[in-house]
Length: 136
Image (tube, rainbow, N blue to C red; front, side, top):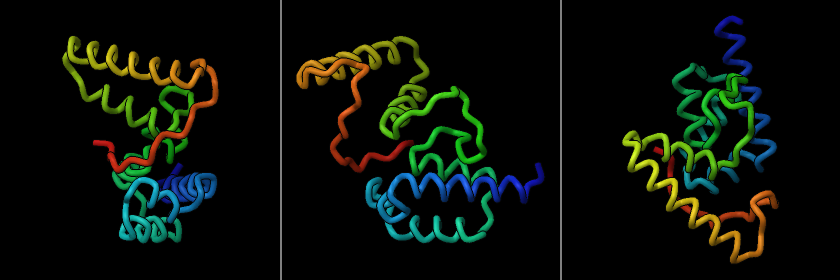
């Protein structure tokens, strides 16, 4: 695949993802990204250069799995934006003990929330409160 073909694939996948997630304005409001990012998204979808670095940055801003816009899935599964963000935070913890403690604490909190709402882990997830936290 040539670079031009890859950039066009990224544009099409971005446009499709935006369409299935309520459009650029909705997504930018949801993740508190502002009009500047919304304008940049519009430029990209309408043909602006969309290289690998720009694609990875856009995936992070929109809380997509790395490689999603290239059609590459590292894990072969689809994660919600919140689950992907949590996974990225865990990945930043390189110390095994810190990571283990954080995982245990987060798991306990999730189980308590599920119990509070009488949900099983396989039930459809409840929408989380809108928050302004950005992936790092």
